[in-house]
Length: 146
Image (cartoon, rainbow, N blue to C red; front, side, top):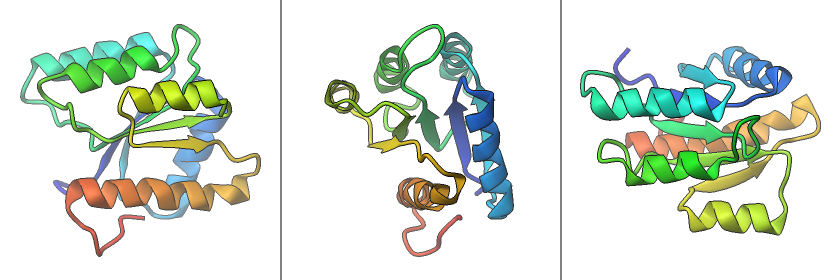
C-alpha cells in the first residue's frame, strides 16, 4: 500500500520491540515496521537506502538511545547528513531521559524525545505522539493513521 507509513524501529530490547509491534497490531495500525536490534545493522540498512534509489524510504525513525554497539547519535547524524532522507522525522524513544541525553539528541536535530512508559497501558500516549509526527510527515494532518 503506497500510503502505508514505514517506521524504522531500532530497539535492542526484544521485549520493548515486541510491545511496540503488538501495540501497532492491536490498534490495527496500517504501518510497516522495519526493525533492527543494533545500530550497526540499522546503519547498514540506511547506507543501502542512501545508495539505491529504488528502495522505499522510511517515513519515521523511532530510535532507542542506548544500543549494544553505539548510542543513537551516529544514526541521527547519518540520517541528517544523507542526501536521500535528511528530513525524515526522528523520535528518540528511551528509558533514559537525563538532560544530557535529551540535549545531545535535540542538538542533532531530532523531532521528539519520548521516555519509554513503565506500563504497557501507557503506550497509547506514545502511539498518539508518533501518530502526530507521521501525519505531519505524510501530509495527512486531519486523518490519523493510528
